Image 1 (cartoon, rainbow, N blue to C red):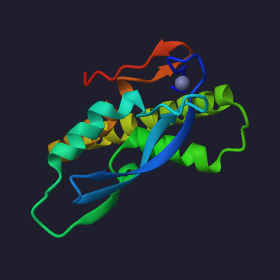
Image 2: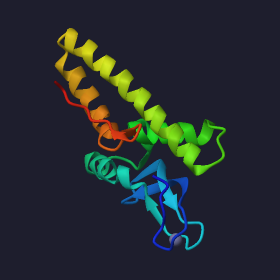
Image 3: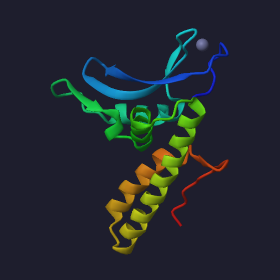
Image 4: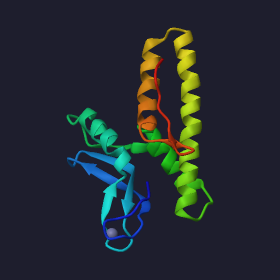
Amino acid sequence: MLEHCNCGQRYDLDFRLVDYKKHVSIDNVPVLICPKCEHEEILPWLRGDMSALLRSLPLDAEPYGLDFTDFNELAHIVYTIFTCSEVDTKDALKAEIMASCALRINALLDLYRCAGDVGDSSWMKEIEARLAQLTEKVCVNGQEVRFSPA
Ligand SMILES: [Zn+2]
């Protein structure tokens, strides 16, 4: 996250409105922008989740809009920190995002245990999907956090 562009400049973080097939407007998609060569791309960690969301969108009704942060745990965290945090360096921002991801993972794991205790398998599935949006790409104290539904 917030690493370097091919031209050597470090990326800035920003958010974009993405139009999908002129039918769905997806707001608050996190993007990396190079302040030097203006290269712009969706945050790499989110590409897979973004395509999965696009594939799942109904296109047979009236055009509509949605907020990506409502559909993605990581995007939600990145957006919240980007808009609320008072830190002023990219490294501090990145650290804050990582810490917030770790907290959210722990909260979700607690929920997952609750869902397991009451034997609610559809709830467990939903939490697993949310965990998957975070756990493949999160490092805590230099170690990758992985979720294993043991
Ligand atoms: Zn560049």
